[in-house]
Length: 96
Figure 1: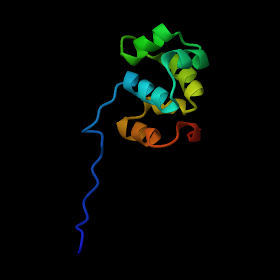
Figure 2 (figure 1 turned 180 degrees about the vertical axis):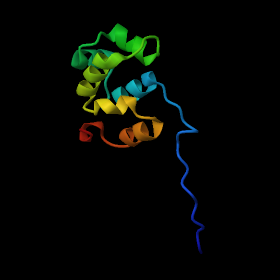
Figure 3 (figure 1 turned 120 degrees about the horizontal axis):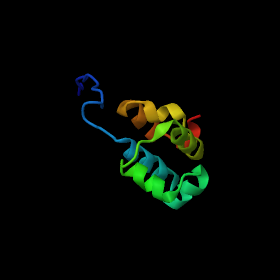
């Protein structure tokens, strides 16, 4: 049986993740609670909750703190959904 080749479609038009959703997914991949991430990042659990719920802007300092704690490239937070999805599909500790 011959399979017809399909053109690959970018995920960008179909999936939109907020910064908070990305933080939550990366934290979940580590199996961490907000308290765990707070301990590793130096950001309070209250502030992490506000970040995950998109109630505050992330800022460069927090990006660097979270990237270091989660073992991902700081640039990952600035990438579009397609690039973030690539990071999420891998072991976050392997991305550095």
